[in-house]
Image (cartoon, rainbow, N blue to C red; front, side, top):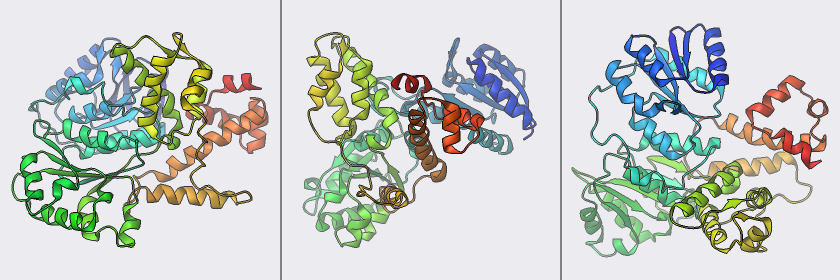
Length: 458
């Protein structure tokens, strides 16, 4: 790499790590904990790339992007943020950031993105776009929260497709938030002032049904909710409807919790409709597939209830362990409803374990995806899980980066269980795993494994 990189982050460790890595790669680096200093450097003409945090002591990094674009058109900015919500990704995209990465970020990944940013001259429109900032009232209402790799990949994909005309298929289990994602794509796109129409099978009845739906949309967005539930006659009407669009065509989105590829093979879903709807496929993971996001979501719903006038509540450590360990067959919707019940039914300010268990009842834990029987080879169980993961994308391929994503999912429980078995002793754990102790320490840091807690459990 060659060039000068301006780094702005209030975390000294991150500034040091980025400075060392970029310097070793051949770059000159100026690092600061102040947005004011960063902007002064930009005004002075310094830097070929900016890497900036969002929440800084003297301001919001996202709010500086329009000014940077005005002062230095073409200067790429990579945004890094610990605010792990879909809104951060959307705001970064609307502010025309070159790229967005959540914290904790993968350093090699960030270095690759930095190298591309330095090599590729970005096209920038210096004229500020009208309504470039998402409407404030929606920011706290979307329970699309998560720091896991799956959700961060989903956020970036939503931000990229938001202002395109591609059809969008959103797949996932019931309660994962598919309709919310469709609504977010509309509400923060250039079509936000136009109607958002949810079309059901009843809306498509008769010769005039599809035309009425198009008329209601007025160039906005049309969502076919649970499109897999449409019968073949309704599907045929949708195909003709999509083929009739002329000027001022609406944006088309669809959701499905069923596997449309299988339905297509069995004759239950039209192939021509499938390919018309799958311009981009967004697969929404279940809560079982992103366990680390469960505490984050629970706290999000608790804070929302407080803003709505509910009494102040907090989760006890034991209560949160139960919440995290639960299978959540109803996904995010079930979690939200359960938290609302806990806010009302808990006796004290701290929600305890017994109160959570009472609300959740005695529902059995869902079997792991794959559901292999006793004696099944590990490779066979893993293969079933991976096949299900690919199938969830409705015939399309998963987002790039499958290898690292799956590797991380396997590494975390492997190291956690090994540490538990060794009573938290890292030297013994490293021997058990057959890796260098320094490598184990690095993995513990990268995967954010709580070593202290594991010692206490023994």
